[in-house]
Each structure stands twice: as C-alpha cells, then as structure tokens.
Length: 419
Ligand code: DGY
Image (tube, rainbow, N blue to C red):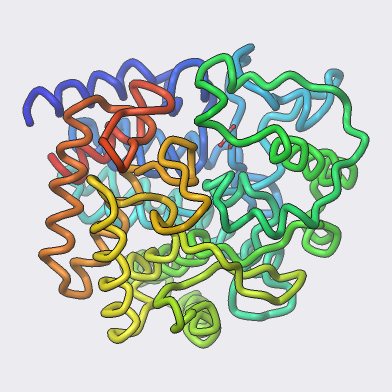
C-alpha cells in the first residue's frame, strides 16, 4: 500500500500545473471540473493548502450567471480538441467551456473542512467558497430546472461526465448532425479508438457545442433549444448529496437564512426522484426529458442514488441485489454498463470499464445503507485493480488497465479512499 500511495502522490505532483491538476498528460491538458473536486480529496491527504488551492482555482473561472464550466483553459495546449478557439473563436478564444459537470465541489469542501488539521485555513477557505457554491447550485435550479420539476436537466453528454454512456444512445439519435466545420479529434492520438466514443457521437457532441455557441451559451435559452435534454442520474444524485453538504456548510457558518431555500431544493428532489426508479429491473434510470421516457440502459449511474442517500431502504435492498448479480458476471466490479446487456463493451470508456471514482461513490453509498460486505468486495476489487496501474479505467473481465495512464482522479481515490 505504501508504494501505491507514494506513487499516487507522485502522479498528482507531476500533473500539477500550478494550483490545478490536469487529469492526465496529453489526453486532458486543462482543469476539468469534477476531476478537480475529486482530486482535491487526494491532495488533502498530504497537502491541505494545495487541496484548497485546487478549489479556488476551479471557482476562479465561475461565470457571472453562477455556472462553473466543465473545463477551464488556464494555459494553452495543443493536445486537446475542442479547445478554447472552438468554444469561442480564433479571434476570441474562451477561457472556459459553456457547459458544466456533476457538481462534486460542495461535497469536497464539506469533506475537506471536516478532515482539516489546519481548521483556521479551512474556515477561511469555506467562507470564501460558500457564496460561490451557493451561486452554482442556484444556477442549477434556475437554468436547469426552470419548470420546477425538482430534478435538473443535463444538456450535453459531456456535462454528465459519462460521455458515451449507453443511456445517451436513444436521446443522441434525436440530435441531428449539423453542417459543422471539419475537425480532427485529438483524443485518438492518445488512446486507441476502440476505447473511445465513436465518430457518430463526436459529430453530435460538436453539433451541440456549435448550437450552444450560436447563442453565446445563454443559459436562459439553452434549456429550451437543446435537442439533447436528459435527467442524468449522476448529476442529480451528486447535486442532491452536494446540497446536503451545502446545507451543512450553511449551518456551520451560521448562514441560516439560506437553509430554507436549500431545504426546498432537497424536498423537490425527494418527491421527484421516485419517478426515476424502474421496479421491473430493480434499477434507477436516467430519463429523456424531451420524450418523457425513462431510458432503457442500466448503467453504474443507477447505483448513485445510494451515494446521494436518496434511495429508500427497499430500493437500496433491490439495488444491492442488482449489483450482486452484475458482480457475478465479471471478474472485477463495478462495470459502468450492465454486463448482461448486448451493448456491454468492457474496454470502451463508459460502456463497460470500471472507474475508481464511481466505485468510491457507490461504496460510500453501500456503507451508508449497511451493505458492508458488498462494499468490502468493491473496495478490495478496486485495491487489486489499482495495484496493476493508476490509470483512467479498467476492464471488468480481466482487470487490465486502460485509457489514459498516470490518471489524477484514480490516484486521488487511492489516497483519499484506500489509503
Ligand atoms: C473528453 O474530451 O473526452 C472529455 O470527457 C470531455 O469532457
């Protein structure tokens, strides 16, 4: 374990570009939103000041409307597409992207504060970050739930963080491919195309970017004009849990006047969340907001309501049974896609491979609901996998490391969870 921890600290240090950590050299050369929030948990185990800096740097790019972008382009790079000149223009490159990502940050700030040895620094940082977190969560409510359904919308597969999840196959089919400028993907120079999203997916990812750019990412318009609008289980589970953290922080700081507002959001989630449960297959499902249909695919995001603590005890029991069934089909857990399904691809990004961050979130949820033995199985699987290399993801059939190497959020999970 000591060797693994030393190696993990080394990865974060080498991926540190000065106050922010890139997910991996070459493949992801900027600051990614939810990567950074998870990476800060890793930094906190050996350098608290540096962990806080990661969060400060992420929020330094917060938009006036409260949004926190999915990528912040602090320094130029030639190894990524689409970069600042696509999100903006060659004449006026953007400093950050016009879409967001699952809002892990409040969970991180809560965790960092609770675990802080230097409480004075922690309190200063929480005071500084709290209004920014609140503004971001308010943005989710107004920009992504303008019809007050209780759940928030995700308008781009990149916003879900699980870009090519089989859950997005159906809604992406309804996204037309516009006559977009020709482009060259950079990801395929770093990772084999068999492990990455397909060209058809990229054409749609880019179409959405150009449509959003055409209205200058005006959040009041995007919800209505996007041809892709889903209720993503990951974003909604993470936001619910992040709101629990935000509420905790508000009470700790004595900011009691915002507590009723957060309580109202939480109640809205609780009422609406049950509509995402599919008892026939004992799983939570994401939903296509434009057709109103639950999406067929069962993915690892379906277990994240456990991380949120929003599943009922009986749903939790059924989810645990589903998870056990999945684990009986693979050597290592947790696959990102149902291993029984026809579109299970053990090496293709979010269509099968194991991700350490998802394993951590689900394990945290299993423990909260008392499924200790199952949590233990996932934790020991993760430990074994990371022992073979700290990479982006792993093949659930044989444990082979895949995707980008020396990967920051995997290293962070090693430090913050397994350490
Ligand atoms: C990528 O480029 O693969 C990222 O997931 C987009 O955020």
